Length: 89
Image (cartoon, rainbow, N blue to C red; front, side, top):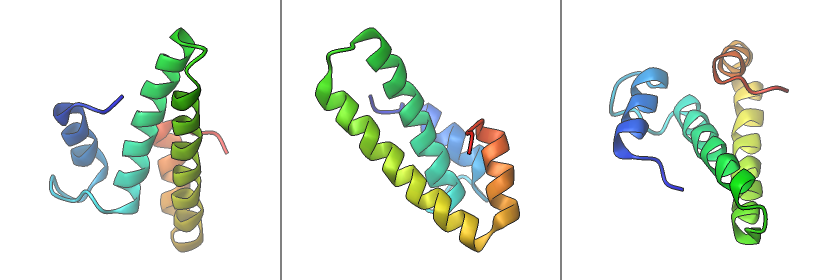
């Protein structure tokens, strides 16, 4: 469930400092969140996709690690990003 180039560029533009800023923590978290949302939709339709479920858990773990790092380094940015993405803590 890869994101399209257009969707990826839109997320980078919204959360990055510029359109080439793909490495910042906020952009990485936003991209992972979009992938998680897409995979969640897929798994609702395909309940027996065990490898897809494993991939989802892996993405969630990656995002959790990045969120923890952002919380340690930039608390205000962390709170703002949670609100923008609609992630509950």
